[in-house]
Amino acid sequence: MVQLSTKLYSFEEYLTYDDGTDNKYELVNGELKLMPTASGFHALILVLLYDILKAEIDRIKQQWKVMPGTVGVRTAKNKSRIPDLVILSEDQCQEIREMSTAVLETPPLLAVEIVSPNNADDDYRYKRSEYAVREITEYWIIDPEAKKVSILLLVSGFYEVKEFTEEQEIKSSLFPKLELTVKQIFQV
Image (cartoon, rainbow, N blue to C red; front, top):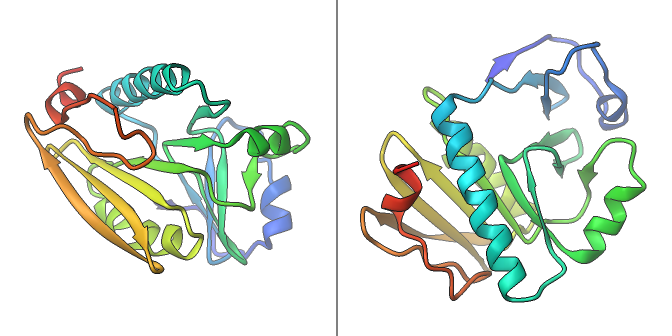
């Protein structure tokens, strides 16, 4: 992630920040961090996951919504992250309808991050800690370089990790009947 400036922003200033571009920024300890543009492979994985999770939500007849990279999650006083994908509850969908900037104050049902090249620490370390503190009960890390998927489940305030590779079927607590292998994700 590229550091934009050394000016520190409050969370309220972040919510109203507009530099006149389509750039997306995360707020990390008061600093704006420009989010890198996704690679084509990253974008294809995101669309695949969106389609599969939307179909699974429809199949289990929930009123949840899949939101790809458009909804932020406040993770601390002066921190806000924009996961590649989140699953929102019905209440959260109502909540964001009335927001001028879609940043949740409550944990989404699921956060998914697709690891960008040269930026793995953000997803494996920093966001992991922030999402645990925010009490996001399920967090997926999709790693195209390592060709693995890590499913992190929150247990007593800490994430327990299960890693999946190749032909292994991903095991999700939110979607227990999901039929998706790691290989399917990386064959897009």
